Image (cartoon, rainbow, N blue to C red):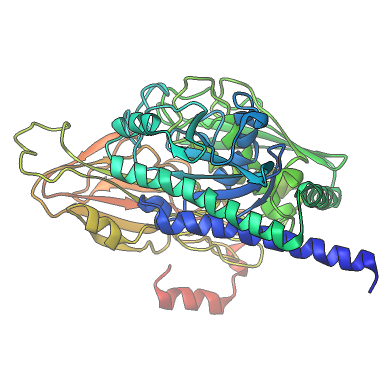
Length: 543
């Protein structure tokens, strides 16, 4: 075997090893986090970066909204803290929505890595913490100042010593300080795990730098993404997607331009920013738009700054997909997680028969609270105070040749939180949680089903639901190539009254909350569905 061939094999082994390193980093966070949305649902990301802050590898565990936003987040730290000023044992943090992952609930933790006193890499991780103060996990705020405590780029650890003053400020502004502290320390620990494994890898392979490896990874990834784009037809395609909005309906307008091995996503003409916290900062908008395209065009190409560099995006500041500070953004995934379907609407015209139908879109965050401070004090005098999050998942759109996956959080990939975990944290109980028959759009391939969830209080007092992330109540997921739309979502009291909007709602004592998650759109003419599949669906009670 030639020397060049041996070197190529060695490089590939190191690349695979690097992916194993960041996956261990993510698993460290997953297994030590305190918040259930991280520990149980996997709402996190982890990655390694070269000395210039370029993301070169990401963990398989995580969400596009975290990973793709973090691709550019690390470099923002350098504007205040140049790498030359960093020391071993330092760790930096921020939850700035416009320079991080899109809302205050995600802390981005960045750790420089040193080998024998020389800076060789960075690790970064992020996860959704349970509470950052303000109005809580609701879209009710009218500015980011109301939504919680913003931590600018600051050191959380200096040369191995935790910045207790900063930590005290963060915890003093949270309703769940124990869980938040646990998550912050878990983020720090996860980066330390990645750093140790990277140093071990470098020593094993006799490396004093990963710059050459990083250059190879990014070059190969960019080349693979460009080749995939060059295989597409060149041209321009447009699509409009109506959304429920908050105070008014919204429209996403997208133009997809494929030319010269690059793709430009142009959102010019989309609705102005909402007065409430459903706006998607540009960094989050780019993350999900690009993820949608890569999922169809180049799923085999590794996700890093190299493969992401072949995508451009045009937005108008002040719109719902590029809000200006201090626009409210807490529930930014209401818009952001619609964007994969929006770009699919364009891509389906360029690649007929090859693009999935629309999905349920944003996961429904079931932010549940005791009614303290919402009803008269004597009503909640003996009630248990609580603040918990559960997650409702709708159906994925049908795919070319396959049915949509039921109760699947596409495009986020976040999992559900087991009902036993939520019930163990508060007096609420899940009276019902099951597939919603008939909610998937009909087609040659059926859309994935949503689900029906009913939640009641074991105590004879009211509780509160924040409906800030409920969408597709008025605008269902559309089918593709003759497929039918999925069923609309519904939010109501078990006694029958519909919940009117995305606000905070009180569930009266003795009543219950029922949500029916939207289904995914169907793909292809329903008349062409295999009769055996129809019979199977009927036997299973899915239709």
